[in-house]
Amino acid sequence: MERAYKGRYYDGLQSTAIVVSVFITNTTLNIQYQDADEQTVLIEWPKEGIQKVSLASTHIALKYGKEYPYQQVELTDIDFIAAYQDWTGGQLMQRWLQMSSTTMVLALLAGIVAVMVGLYLWGVPWIADKVAQQVPVEYEVDLGKSIASQITTNKTIDSNRTEAINHFFEQLKLETTYPVAITVIKSPVVNAFALPGGQIVVYDSMLVTLQKPEELAALLCHEFAHVQLKHSTRNIFRTLSGYLFVSALFGDFSGISAVIIGNANELRNLSYSRELESEADGFALAHLKKQRIDIKGMIGLFEKLQQSQTVTVSEWMSTHPDLSNRIQKATYYQQNNPYTVITNDSMQFYFNQLQQSNEWQ
Image (cartoon, rainbow, N blue to C red; front, top):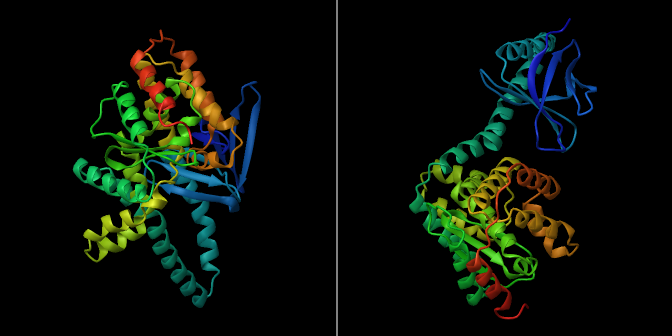
C-alpha cells in the first residue's frame, strides 16, 4: 500500500488551500481529500505532466496542467521529497544511460542553457524581490515622487479633489512609515494605483463609482497597504528585474532609477500576485475594523466594479483580479468579526466635497 503524505492543494480556481493526502504510484501522483459533503475526491496527475515549481531541503511545490490556471500541491515532508526525487530521478537516469555520447553532450548543453534561462526568468526576479524589501524608505520616497511626476506629466490634476481626498485620508488614522500624498487625475479610465514611498494616484472616474465614504475608505486602505507593505516597490523591482540586473552587472547603479522612471507609464498597470492582493485586502479589513468603519464599504466597492459593464473599468479589474472571491472573503470577515460601526462626520464631509467639487466631467 502506498504511503500517504500530507500536503496543501490549490485547484487553480480558488485561493484557499485544501489539506490533502498525497500518494506516489508507479505512473501517477495521486491527491486525495474529503469535500464539503464528506465525499472522497481523488485526483490523478500522470508523471509526465508534473512540473516542479520549487524544491528545498524541507519544501517542495509541484504544479500540473497544460494551461493556466494550474493545479498546485505543496509539501514539507522530507520523506516525500526524498521519495519524489527517487521517483523522478530513477526514470531520468534510465533515459540518460540510453543516450548516445553526442546526445548526452547536447542534453548537457541544453541543461546549462535551461539553468541560465531559469536563473534569468525566476532567479533574478526572486533576488530583486529580496533586494526591494531592504530598500531604504528615503529611496522609496524619492523614487515614488519621480514616478508620480512622470505619470502626471501632461495630465490634468484636479486640485480641489486632491486636497479633499488627502483630508479624507487623514480621517482614516493610518499609521504610516511614509509621507502619503494622494493625487486625483481627470480621466475617463476607472483606475487607482499605489507607487513606492507613499504616492497614490486616483482617477476621478473611479470616484464617480463610489456612493459612500466607506467605499472610498476601503479603496484607500487597500492602496495604502501596497505602499506600507512595500508591495509597490517589490512589484516594480520584480517586473523590471532584467533591466536592473544588467545595470547592476555593469555597475551602473544610477541607471537603475532611470530604468524605473523611464517605464513609469507602464508601472501604473502592474498587477499584484494573489498573495499580495490578499495581504492588502487583509490589511484594509483589519484597519476598517480598528476604526469601526463599515466593512460593507469594501464589499460595495468590489460589487460596483464587478457589476459595471463599461470598458474603462477593465483596467482596474485587470490589475485587481478575482473580485468575486474577494467579495466572499470580505463578507466572511464581516460575519466573523462583528463590531459596532461608528459614523465619522469628517469622512462624510470630505466625501461630500469630492462629489460636489468641479462637477463630474
